Image (cartoon, rainbow, N blue to C red; front, side, top):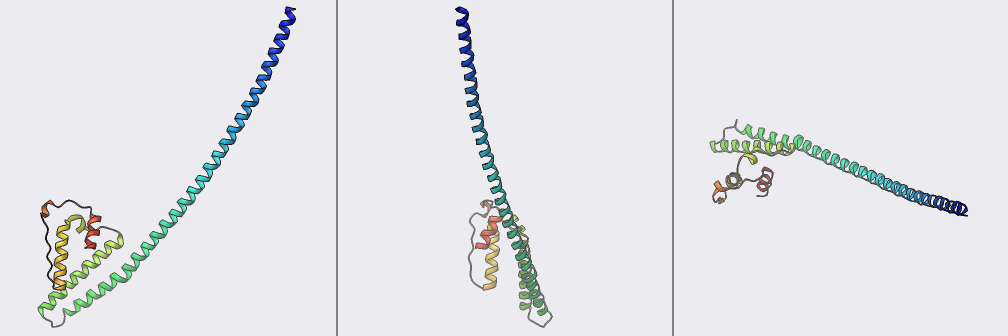
Length: 184
């Protein structure tokens, strides 16, 4: 009887273990299948994101190229048209110097020629997208004094420009200084 008991006991244990292994194998397979499906879904999302990023980069690149092309066109137009017209005006002004005119008029022609040359130089810096050296080298108070003097001489008006403690003037980035100068 004990032998029969042990045979039945072992048979039941083996059946139980077999059932458990089969059942847990099925659970393992389900979990594995679910993880594979989740992984595939994440890979699909990642692929969609990569495509979206690539489209965005392409649009951004195209926009940057369009902006750069427009800047080149404007720079070319400024150089080919505006700068050339200013050069022509300067040459015409210089022709006045060959006529018998008053000394004061000669001085005025020379000043106008200097102003046109400065304007041409400024345009060339703007066309190339560079900061003029004067904004890098000179303090804002000095630039404002020059501007006031220029306006006084052109318009013959009284302008009072005063800097308080220019030696204590703080340093301003050249780009900011240039923008402030043009605003003023």
